[in-house]
Image 1: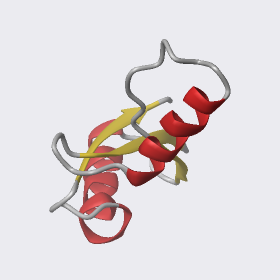
Image 2: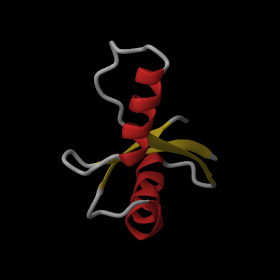
Image 3: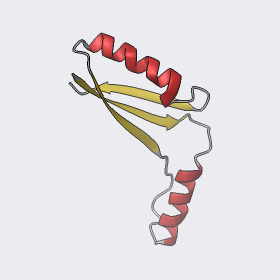
Image 4: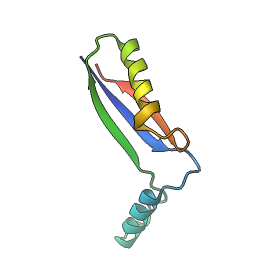
Length: 81
């Protein structure tokens, strides 16, 4: 069994309303040194495969079919072992 993380974030140039709201809230709290906030989502997976290349291929399929929207998201896959 392997563990993996998939990090999903908005592509450069895509508006990040959640990040903008966090930035506004931080400024209201006095943290004016923060200039930009981008929000990303991390999904942890346990996959019942022992070979990393096969696991990466399956996770890539999962990303393309369910975990991301390829029009607005970039993602990275990290196999943790």
